Length: 175
Ligand SMILES: [Zn+2]
Image (cartoon, rainbow, N blue to C red; front, top):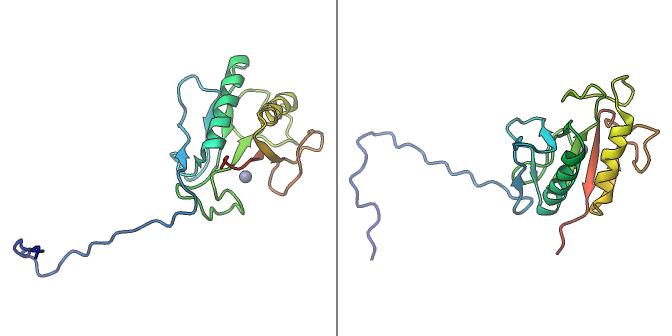
């Protein structure tokens, strides 16, 4: 029989409790979006910080990478990518979705090129550039729906809270 605990007991009379937290996994194999890689077409924003809310599934991330490289080729300003999902997926307040790594928030673009939020009602809102960016997402063929409130924007649906960013719902990962 194997001997377990043959080491002498620790000198302290109060044993240190070993707490092992096993995370609940809602979505498998999510990967963190690279944070501000050199010469990329996107920048990152959002809370929690350090990309802890930027875990995506393989289809969402690979689609984003092809979009950002096309974008970077033709533009000097970068677009902002915010919340995707938490590391293991699951509930992500205050969002009702963003649970499986297949949804992503992207900021509308500004005329002054600042990497900052802007709503579609603001004079700094760059409708033409935002339209081109949304079209680039749709042209990927991997997008189901986009929510955004600019009534003059083709191909999007309005949804409360989507004045300064659009929400991209990617198609499911291929089985
Ligand atoms: Zn969203």
